[in-house]
Amino acid sequence: MNRKLLYTLLWGFLLMLLFNGCRTNDETIKNERQIQGSEYSSKTLWNEDEKYIKNVIKIYNQYKETVSKSTQIKGEPFWDYAMTMGQFNESYLEVPVVNQEKVVQILRVIRKGSQVYFGSNSAEKASLDFFQQLIFGKYTKIKAEEERKGKVNSGGGATAYGEVVCTTRKISMWYPDNNNNPDGSGHWESKYETKCEWVEKEKVDTIDPCVGPECVGGGGLPEGGNPGFPYPDEANKIDIEQLKDFPCAYSLALQLTNENIGGDLARLLKDTFGANERVNISFVTSDNKFLGETVTGGFRFTGDANNFNGTVYLNKDRLSNATQDFLLSTMYHEVLHGYLNYERSRIGETEFNNRYPAMESYDVKLGDGTTMKKFLFIGTDQNHNRMGPFINGIKQAVLNFDPSYPPYRAEALAMGGIIAENSLPPGHRGISSHEADGSTAALGKRCSN
Image (cartoon, rainbow, N blue to C red; front, side):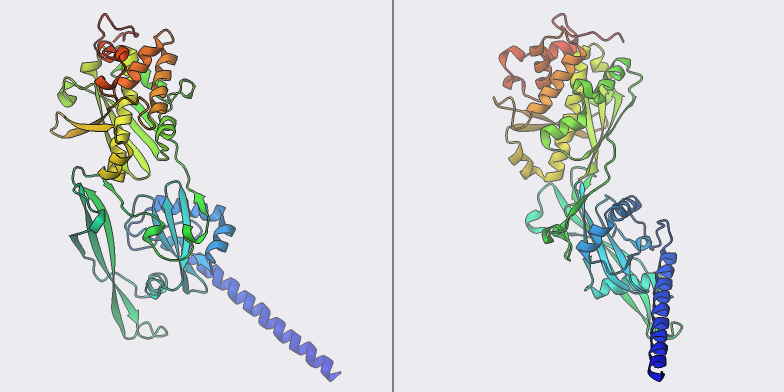
């Protein structure tokens, strides 16, 4: 009887401990989630790439089970304290993982093109302590910030076309000597964060030279066998609203996004170059004063390694007499010139020349004193190592717009803006100039404005 009573009391005591432990753990998790909130709201001391952070949160929530297994997450990611370390090109972030009010891991998320990869590290004490104080430290604050800019030699990676510029930021944080007595004595510790960027000498555009698994150590990276996850894609955008004062060009620009005539620029770039970048292009009207009397159009690109953004300029003065067939092909050509210049800046001059050996470039001086780079394929190979899809796409767009136009002339227009005149088939030479001038030898449709 006494033994039975003892067992009953013992199990009752253990059950009370179990319930108390569960309640304590549940309360801890609840408190931790209250600290970071239900909706993302950055609580770091710096500006962050919030667009990237929000997209990564969506990916994490969608593939949570797979990510947790591959990175062996041991707690709750505190997204409000995610840091992109000065990067604003949707490429990199670190987020602390918290278990019972202690930072136990750093989750790293790296973007490579259209894929993102999750990795984790629980061994870097400095990073763990940094986030611990940032989230839970009563006296965490910035004592001083200073930036030191300098140029470093990147060794074999440097070329004559740019330089690596590094910015170092000093962050000082207060650490109490006794965590149980935060109002007592303590000491300051400093941390330095360095961000390096490749800066082109010829332009202000910068392409980050090191975004991806090869830049950062730690587990959970692609070479470790963990899967990548698709990054949310944004719709390609082609803006033609600023062409409304050039009605002929405006109506033709509508063809550029019409898949039925094979004019989808993003698709043509992908088919020709394997491009996965998002396309964001604006078409605007220009004139002789800006582009020069002999230039029909131009392109300036902006963006980064994952985005092909830019502006197409159409010379209304030069194109006022051109046929619609020529004008349509010119729009495609200018986008192609812009993309080639983008590729050249992204991969570097040496690699670009290796990929496109049958190509030469030249500079066009603009009315504001700046220069614009254009490209011509030379030699006798009309496909020129992958140009076939783009040439055929332009040709088909012209023929679908004007079915009565002779196919060989449509092919001549497709080649004319990107292949040197002396490299064209003899029967194609001179056709583009006739259509550009709207001469009596032109066979294309005339503009009515």
